[in-house]
Image (cartoon, rainbow, N blue to C red; front, side):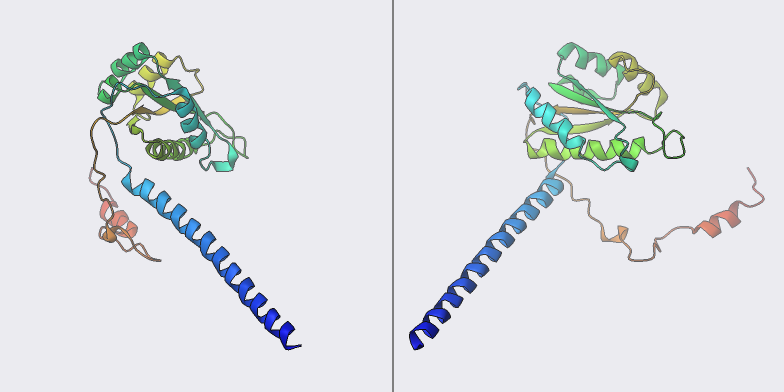
Length: 226
């Protein structure tokens, strides 16, 4: 009888050890994944200079896949992506966006476009395409960084002239608006990310930041003098 008790005791201990190891192993993997995600977010920076090495279409497709995993209001998914890896077309875009000098050395770029004509539940054009496409763009930037690529967000919308120039260059249909262009390539040199964390930008429960309150602004402009 004692033999069975002793055997049962050791089996229970062995089972407990196995469960602890399994838990610790899974927990360690979760911690490792969390650290990798935060590291990717905190070390990303805008890269504006690239080597001549090309970016494969497999990578470019992966970036679009990551972008399309972004949150989207009412699941409308208003985004469309124009992938540009033709050097002549990249130079045309540089002319369309004179301030976008990163396109001069970028071997590839992706134009993130949205469709404002999609209807919401009340059959009105949705106003959320900008937010949806912005979320998609951030996904793309983080995915690029995780793949060892450099990238920079080049704004287009809502400035009318750049919107018209980019739309014409890319031959976009009238229902699409270019939100931005993401220049892509293998980084030239090392870029140091900026520490943008500022504790003063955080409040809990009440947003009592310095500055005029809404009521004060209304009082100061009432009876207006402009």
